[in-house]
Image (cartoon, rainbow, N blue to C red; front, side, top):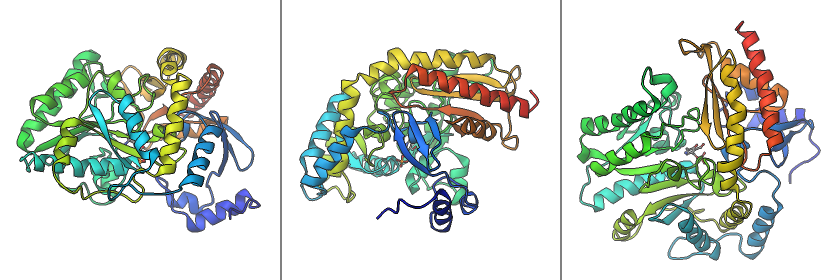
Length: 455
Ligand SMILES: Cc1ncc(COP(=O)(O)O)c(C=O)c1O
């Protein structure tokens, strides 16, 4: 049983002694600095000392419908009472799995009508690597095995997903990527665009894919994978010309196009999926996070008819997880989608809070240490710079991003630092008043950061 009598100090001590954290320096935890979060409601969370925070990140970009939704608790309880578990192996299903696959087929872009469930985005991307290579083998093109992704991409932490990632520290940890993974530069206009317009830069950045395909040989390239907006890489929203050009190149060389919608899916960019926002139709998509708003772990691979029918003709599919389509997670995902639909949250992002958030953040374009304010929908980032005229970004050693993140935290606002960018991804139910509060707290944190660096 959970011991509810423990103090914050007790929990920090136990945590330091036994718990290995994700994406955390273990020394910080063994030093007794764990933040203990105990409760959430709407866009707010409370720590074990009763301190309230406005959660500008919706957990890890995932609590799309906000914390404290009793409806999701009830859906889980009903399913657990009825049938807590059954698998989808060996031609079995449960109503919740079937219903969720059917529901997703109505929401995803046309043609993406088949869904393979996993428990996390990483597992889903790992699955995609296997499925796509299997697809090409069955198509009689077994050499098409290499995946192309982008620098600063984040696609997960399993072996294959980490190889899809484009973050140097992810590869450095265990000695590089697996064979069969290549990367092109991410389309960050502010960083790499120079004198080009955004649209010109978007085309140029996409054409790097064509060059990479030709360099590797189209007969060796299986797929291109990208997040419609790169999230964990710092909210890189590409120019409008980028994705259509990527799609054109993929079609030209018969390279499958994969949209990793783990962050962008379920309303975050103002459409159900980021691919719709950028006007492309992928062959496969990765879904996770907003699928259940993080209430339970569930993810999915969406595939189109061509992919499904090819692998469908291959006999026994030697792939799957015990928890693929876990009925409780599926029931919660269905209830979560009901909320998004009933409350019109996708339209709300596109027509109301997305524009309100970006209008409010635009004032920081005048701030002495903010070089660029970027993003779309409920995704936003502020690029911290030393010099606005030369676009000189703070260095890692400066640590301006982390300084500003901690200053925000001290104001009671959770944001994330990605390098020298401050990143936001609040829940889709955030109110105007809460956005005003974000902006107010962020302003104080930015001012403090500027003072710290004498700017
Ligand atoms: C775009 C993207 N893909 C994949 C993943 C991995 O998902 P998970 O952490 O559920 O394994 C993430 C996680 O943040 C992500 O942002």
